[in-house]
Image (cartoon, rainbow, N blue to C red; front, side, top):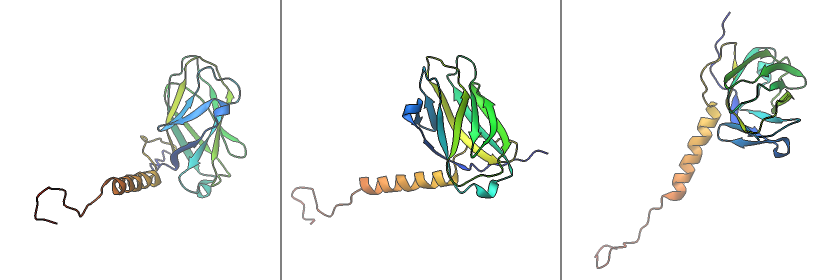
Length: 171
């Protein structure tokens, strides 16, 4: 049966490791051109994922820049619960992880195909069910962005009380 989720359970932040050939970019991760060996980064949950243990989940994300075939990546918690052979475009992995935690989830390569150009993995979405929906940010990310914008506006707008017009009778 088709089960549609909708709510993104991942934040739009990542824990990357420059020594492991990747860096965080807007909405995702860039894997450096020429990267070989162990490549991994962490997906950061927007909320505690333990209530989703043992339930069917779908991870989807975009890939761009892949020129030399797909690389295999694993969704890893304490063990691997799903593998995906990357392709340009939207990638989808449906799986059941019996022991989700509230900590970061490792996204790790199994066998990487090296290429000279960088590869971009963006718009990660983890949702309940087996039918992926279009990418949307987690509600926590939307709230954080609104609060950051409001704080920036508060810092930028200053209301003065002194009259700056010369020869004015206003004080």
